[in-house]
Length: 288
Length: 142
Figure 1 (spheres, each protein chain N blue to C red):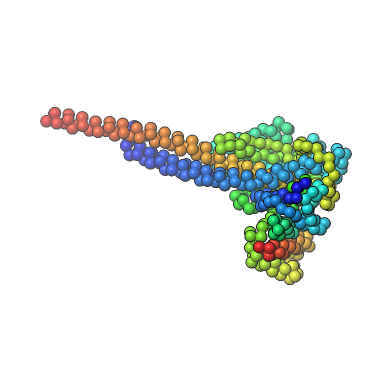
Figure 2 (tube, rainbow over the protein chains, first blue to last red):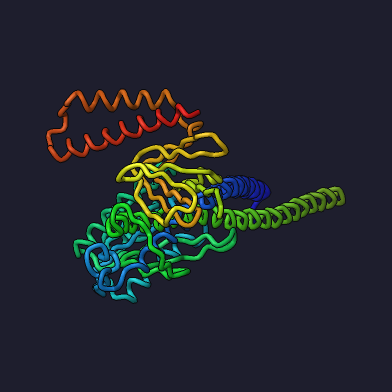
């Protein structure tokens, strides 16, 4: 039976934990709002880039795509894989990172990839995959928002270069898609070879190109891939805060329940002590 | 027939401008392009330069640093890596950047022995110089 002082101590400790979790929840809520703003601001660019790429890629026949600038579409079906994994830096956000990492390593097993090359944004993905036979090429942690695009450019540039040189057969992008505050879905998609994009309408009109369409497409496609990775990073950041918000909310509630239980236990123990003291006094008085 | 163009300038970080304008001048990679309403569809790569546009009689300017422009119907879409309006530009900072870039380019300082490094370093500062010059030009429109 724990003493009154022990229970008191436990209540205090749980209360302190509760304070921390509820503060973390509030911080995440504020950060989530900012992350959502970032996504909103990045969306028009991403959409327009996609529409330009799709309207361009319908202009070329398959034959043309196979030559030269169609390199990024080439499908070799080989197993040399590179992965760009986007996770968060910090934990305490439920199964956010581990769900994604597990789904990703399962997919790699399914595809028969034994040793993929990893470029990882965020500490948590690194923690998971450093214990696996996969090779981690780079790991960026604690990246401030203004440096994100530059890092994405470096990593994507490196991988597309190697893809074009036929050193890689596919590049996979894995991240958490932010659906809503209560739902984040792990997404694993193929980045390279680029999947042909369904054009909304086939545009048959003459278009002036400056310089040639080939040259534009070459740089445009790389921009497109970069942008996909960048947007997925923003998505992950928003998802991280949302996941932390929900899990910290649950933690705060659980702490509240524990406090209630302990308080009840404390009161009972206190009452029991008083009663036994009274009995002692009364029986002492009687014996006189 | 419409006599207005809709100009949209977006970057990966934000939407810089959406406005109905009378005409637009784009800094195409192969030279300046003047766009008026009913222009033929066009897709071009943009150099670092100034987008100037005529909006209700006033000429205004935006600095862009590499990107793409698409003209389709009466919509001009500019996808830039970086775009700034005249109000956003810190003139003093741009001037300082120009001075610094020039100093480094003229000094011929070969602190990096590798020729490759030297070449890429030179390129970086040439780009910096161009950006600062463009910024200063745009800032004058304010």
